[in-house]
Length: 194
Image 1: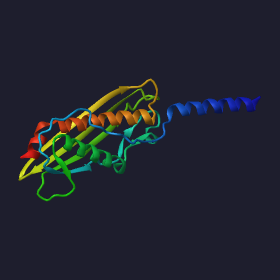
Image 2: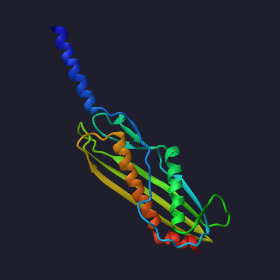
Image 3: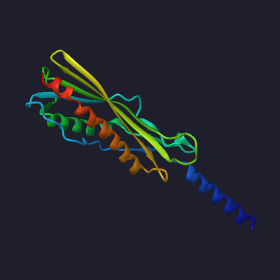
Image 4: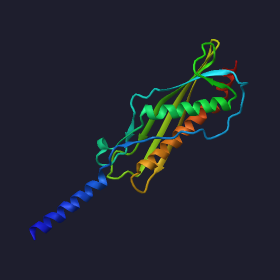
């Protein structure tokens, strides 16, 4: 009888822990341009660089009772090639030709300045999160320079703690939105073509 009671208590105890603890998530977002861009160039070469300016690959935690075990991260080695591909595609849509290294060509540097995932600290369950991304653009052409910052954020509520697939989609959407805003800035296309 005592053994059965003890087993019952252990089972209840472990069920409670499962509801509160989240394992770390390593996301692999797929940023994509979300709108068409107006071509302003005439095929001129542009050197396109994408860099990671974040202080850490960790975006934040999913909260819950044990936030220290629920870190969400995105590795630069996974994300930068995808951002590079999208940035080069955007430069082509603007009417320019991405170039790997041309000393005299205009240069566009896209920096991922920040990527955050914040959920409320209190409470056992994750019911909402705010995801935010910020890019910086630096354009250099014939002694002229232009800098801009472009941000996007999303507030999301959940019925249950979000899994890796859900969080990957949310982070992808926010990155896509911020990157699209950057390339929709008409000054970037103009300065590249002067």
